Image 1 (tube, one colour):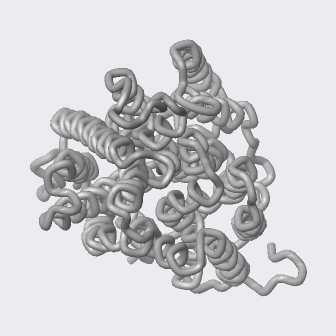
Image 2 (cartoon, rainbow, N blue to C red):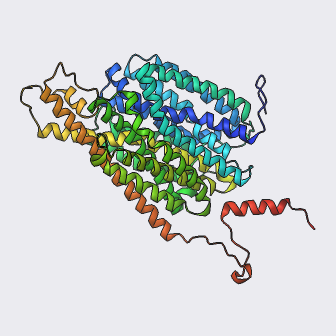
Image 3 (cartoon, rainbow, N blue to C red):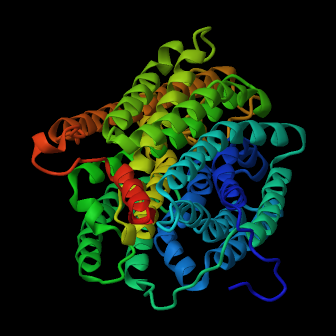
Length: 533
């Protein structure tokens, strides 16, 4: 049903796919491009290390915690109406972020952006993976969505560095808002608006998911700084209890927003874990890669975004290829290879990263691994879901990926902050500086606002830079080890799973020919459309 005053929706599959990609793009770019603008935001607003982490994590945290209910709202209100309203909220929040004068205002504006952005990824993917479309078109649509995510992830830092270097981070926020308004027009013209008001919203599941996300961030980041032992202990206990409660509640609900069956299946559960870690590694790497280049090597934001261009082509190529090949039961293997590439590249960063002449090697490895793992895991989780569960599986997969993206800066920042605390305790003083214990020194060593060379001796500034350099390398190492561990988990599940080999001779097998799920769906569709002799 088309609301009054809106142009009719296009029936072209290409127009619908283009509208879905345009609606998804602002949410993907706001995460990738903000990484290039964070150092400039930190210096302009005088943000502490904790405030920088909250500014980086507020959008993906809010968006990820609300994504479970986004597809349900789209089912009740219509995909076009939901996307148009969400993009409008996103644009208004971008205008607020551009006008922010304090760190708190910026964090709240990005949180409001997350309220609008929570709809963009799951609803656009659910429209592309609709069971009403032929299986081949669904696979192409999901593959294009994954390629769009890979390109936004690689080109977003370039856009952020370009706009921030020339006009400032406030103009970048305005550009993202304008892009969201353009996407509103495309959605109104290209996306249908079917509604089903008989589907429940599951407010309990959405509320529990939001509480778990907030508690996770507070446990890792702290309310206003590095968390103490009491905060970490209480947060961990709350997370364990809330997680068990969420699973019990969702398993008993008829219209649950969480795909509990995917969590019970070992293979799909492993793929969901890999999605969370893929985006955690990627967001943590981008976040501290820009801090490493801009603060330690005095690189301009635009020039700091150039190394990520090396990852663009491998990410786009491998993402599309992985999304297609996962149709044939290769999702676990491809995701394991991608995570192994990402983990190896992250572990190699201290040795061949900038300014080494071999720096393109780890960047290309991270891009290729991101495309392989993301394309295979996202396509396998969404396309293998039963027809009645596509919307729920899509929301669960995208929510897991978004929450992983929000935890990346928090997890890597915790490692850097812990290293800075250890360094300050083991280095009580530096010759020529009696104020080594000042909070500004600790904030700079943790990745916050850098020290002013005019206010501190050169020896102190150099010591802080060495500490930050070592902390970033430790963070990359932790992310790389986690990626390798999950790659081994995926490989274990791949070896346990019995491969579905098509039987070429039905008579020898004693039954009909077995096809992979998507191919079997196409065969059934063609058989039903063939008139009887």
